[in-house]
Length: 262
Length: 251
Image (cartoon, rainbow over all chains, first blue to last red; front, top):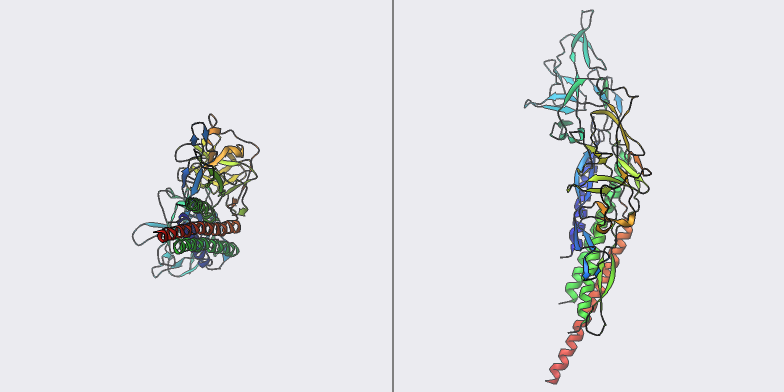
């Protein structure tokens, strides 16, 4: 069959994947701690129809060969871990990481997941949990009769308890960093899992050793730029349309051939 | 049999190949750092002991358009785009040194600087390895400096320098893996020499240099040419039919 059909088909499916990535970014424009993805395109292998420099006769060679590309594919999506805007929420258990680092939450299966989403709440036992109810790791328990909670930029959590003059230290929120955060696996629910390519988590105190500071009463908004995504969407749509034009043109060529010859 | 039918057939086939080249360009309209391929046809006379009436067409790729694509701002420190001429030098899976303009770089778990497709990026002395860092800056000349983990932000440490090269454009060709390398007859001994005048811009990526409209028009133009080649075949067929009818009437 006509090779351009297959080539433009790869173009269509790559643009389609790109569109999914863009629409996922746009859908998460208001998701706290969301990091945008960018589809990475790569051209497929080239096939050599005629080798450049091949001998056309004993004493002459072809000046240029024919190498034909076979299309394109999306080789991966690269998460962009740039900082999102910090939004003031005034909620005492809302935290944002200003700089590098992730919060840790304990999943029900006993594994640790990592997140930039710092919207924490209390459960019935007084544990600090995320929106899904997974406790913060290391666990912080807020006693009853607490009138106010203060989280320092280094992650120290202290509480003022009713009828007690001195604040009580409840624990410390630690952060972890990875050599290659792009290698983390996004599992949904604003959570990431460690993989071989992300490297081991390196736990540390906020504000020290390259980790960002923890800002109480703020959340980190998504780093999706709406204008950028819309522009990408337009270019993707046009690229898709033009690739589909190649498909229909090629189809008409084959149609013309089969109707007129034979 | 009328010889023109073979000529029409070869024309149609070569048109199809040219169309694949244009379709590939169009498919890569969003591929970072992609360089479009040219496709042209050349007449190939048939040599031999006969009357030289025929010249077949032959599609070939005379080269690759190495002009620059548009600069896209990404704001990511590890995205680099080369301004003007020049190439980033990376190590292909075969181990040889190849060139690319696709500067979406990553740091892997061992601190190795890699392209988006995983090839190690070459520096002053082989692949670039980065120690753990807080922040990273790539200068215009390719110098990679970092603030080491826990280090004061005002004390940048120079780690390596990306190998930027600029071999003559007519010595280059695109390989089957999409990377650019020297033509076999232009090969040089040892590594590609550095070119200190190549400049890159961090926080940008270079878009594909494919002009989508141009490729689409070429595609439509080739489709019409194809139809004309089919028409030649059709005419040859009706000539042949007419001949057959004549022979029938004779009998």
